Image (cartoon, rainbow, N blue to C red; front, side):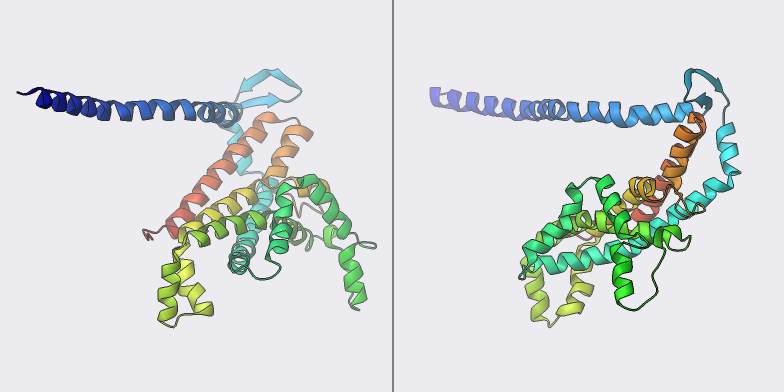
Length: 311
């Protein structure tokens, strides 16, 4: 074997060795980069979840955490017979359904409009995304002022129109829709942002081919854009569902669960059990039950919206 052949063979062996070691190096780098996130997830997400699960099996008072008693599934058995809890779950599901029915289609329509870069698009984007960087308590206080029976903005407009003024937050029939409107206004910017990212990922050639076939306007959105954004829609639906289950601030600031428990949802009911009645074990059982229900609901949504479509 010549000297050149020996050098070529050595280079080939070094290249092959590097090719074998490279994936290990990448895995190590990936592990180092992910370690802080995994540690944070374990400490701040899994840790409280395990703590809540253990507490749900015990009778624990918030006033004295050192004295607790193992009661097994007694908290869950009591929960099944608690009509106030089921009433709060009913309010939660009404809120979730109402929010999904309004927010997801409206966010899609707004994203399509914003994607066209019409005049005033920048101002509209700023208006939609402003709630994302505003404190939830501030938003609740502002909307509470607008809902005031005598001096609120909405009743001023209604009175100016010649229609009878409305009680809004003091009415059992209107309080939950009023809270729902606050939630939609607060979260819709996030949904629009996700839809915009999905729209901008669709290749322009798809729309060009559709327009050559004469598909335009509503039919383009119905038969081209919506099917291509099915996975994006699934993400938006997931996020809207999770945000809806965890809504608390507007209820705490604006209605305190009233009137007549009309806005008492699952999270506010859990807050009452833990911090007003000092029953931490029972509140933990509520939290674990809600997590299980949310996981089941997300699994159903994933089943309904799943797609193998690629582009």
